[in-house]
Image (cartoon, rainbow, N blue to C red; front, side, top):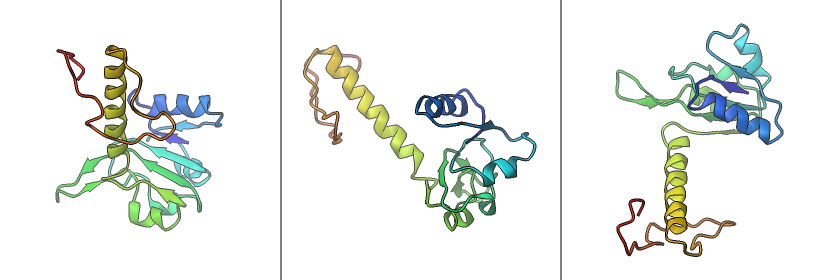
Length: 148
């Protein structure tokens, strides 16, 4: 289940889940009976941009929770869209905020940049597709490549 129907996270994520064979429900902050939907979700992806929008006691025991939200409180603390402390007691797996989805986004961006550079220079990939080992020094540009 995806909470949030934005073009940046919600809709693309729901399409990826559908393509992976998941039965996917897309909700948003105005969905009636949102609690009912959340309580029945085995996989919950939340991206609404509201700190603590999903209370931890709504999480189905054993669920997987991916909190994409990143919100800075007036105190300066960074929190997600899910009440992490309460949700982590119920969920089998949950991404922390900060330190969950963000670092994976950066790693994927770097991986894609290196792949684009390899393809631009028409070289054999130096990054194993099976086990990707991050090394920023894998490719040393030898020209004025805009990517490298």
